[in-house]
Figure (cartoon, rainbow, N blue to C red):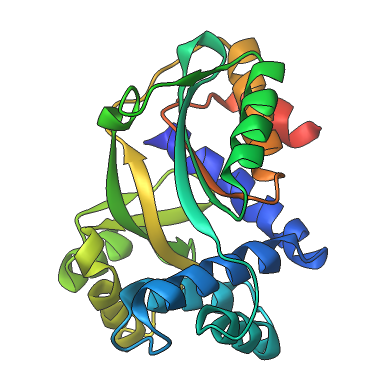
Length: 248
């Protein structure tokens, strides 16, 4: 899973930049709004809201921004967002899954198609690439403890797997176990960077450095779109492609 972890490193650094210009807060606010519309404003009974509030905490999102988004989700004005998932092929046949929240599906699908095509990819039929992904809980932990210790604590907390590659440890859980594992980490006084639901590829694909760099550019272009919440891939990112992507 080293390739997946390296993409997480890029996203982590990019999220810090996005937070500075408010883009990350805008994406989180949309997610709060739809979570409240679907499950109500109480995070104790709304696991989706509980998860996005964890992301808000990790991003240091201002309390007033969170409260406004909750009010919008409770029906106090604001747009009606719709969840849509697009499946795509990137350069060299790499699989991509793009999750969006939009108030205009026709506009968004046209925009996604334009970006994908511009960067050498193509849209895929529903189910064409999703078979290679499974939903998991993901908790990222800073590397201030040993691999042996994170493995031991993750097993004790009820996690399924730990990826030790990259700048952070990635702890994977069953989707319904995310919050239980997180609470166990908190009781252990384990520092946590982020906790969320994610799509984990079952099988990674390796391509040449040039193609990998092209896929990364496509993914960044998609994530720069206002309606796009997340982008997932089965690309196995090489050190060379990572270095090229981070240099730009």
